[in-house]
Image (cartoon, rainbow, N blue to C red; front, side, top):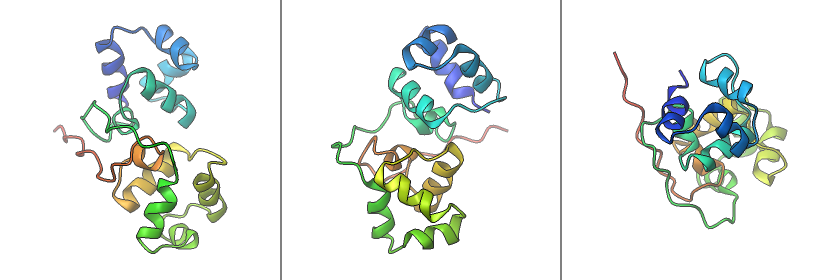
Length: 150
């Protein structure tokens, strides 16, 4: 369920078309994402998070908290930092979550953005927010998990 995006977009009074224009995504893609038919790319998700002033974790329905943590100092490198702090090699991460070591290297050097699936695997492995791994914040603590609705 990608309900947080739709709810937040509506709360901010934006149509899919208006959000698409601001975020540089297509209205069709935002609609497909909201309907759970086709996920956005990480680049699109980041742009939308900035437009809606929220966290990537909230857009991924990992938390009910809308307000993002404070911005990081912009130095980047949080994925490498947390990996080294946990005494793991890139190969060690690959063995635990199945993400190819060369992909991890690309993420750490900023050569490419992680896929949504991979950022979630890494956030869960290290118990941090996706925002932390994407260098949007320097707060390591994950956001409170989404309340389970019965």
